[in-house]
Length: 390
Image 1 (cartoon, rainbow, N blue to C red):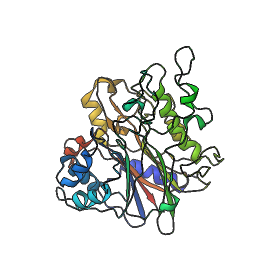
Image 2: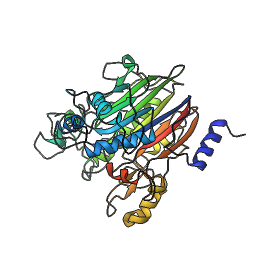
Image 3: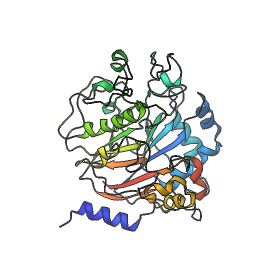
Image 4: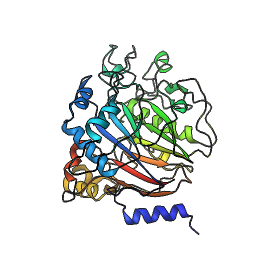
């Protein structure tokens, strides 16, 4: 006999639940969206948030009003500690109706520093000169570029939040250290010993859902490109993804130490959802083989409800190019890239712990004839949503 969880998943995927409907009571909708608001200059996003009429933020707000998540992770949303981005986003955009959509407001949020744009003082890109975006702990032109923001209708246990911004890549057992052709290490031993794993950060956030506590494991690993034969970004991407596999492994991971000095992974039996732009497609793209599979195939993670959209399938067929050579299902794509090179890929994920009751999942990617089609170009990624029974 099939378990109720698998039956619910099968029914969801068959019915292609609509993201526009408000989730019923005792149902939780989680979303992840690479909003591509990583702007080129510090202060640009703060100015846009203050304006009330920035076109891309208006589109972002309408997407959230249509999908209506209870918790959402925004990737590539610049982190500026001098600006209350969540309050400005709520007051100036989300709490104002766009194209007749009902306003939405998130009473709680989480943000923290990230590694992008933070100067390492080292020559990390191997050009012989320290300094610049390639020598930051995570690629970026200024601190906080391509940051993360979590918005929630539910309260967070801020005292339980764990961040892993400073976790060393070399502390990961069996880390994929980049090597020159021939086997010589790309990084010197001194640099390798200091290099941080997260290109942005890894966050473990606990939410109070009444009778239930749920952990959101949020991150945004580096894209596996923009490097050389040493494949330093591909290897880092693989190990950034692997971090959450080790962290959630019921066998434990005592080698993991958070920024506050506490050791260990998440406790066995803890309810969690891994969220973010993984920059790794299960079948296509430039990532290290098996990068996404580390989580998709973990026995304690439920990856059976694959978010899809008609818009993604139609876009791949319409755009052609390298999409014709892809092995993956185009309906599961979540990103729309140059069709001469990368094509459309599945990069954005919400992966719940096995045992949670999954009710639905999908990608907000309207077809050209559907309502909301004009929102597709707000980002080169699409919002992904997941419904869970509380």
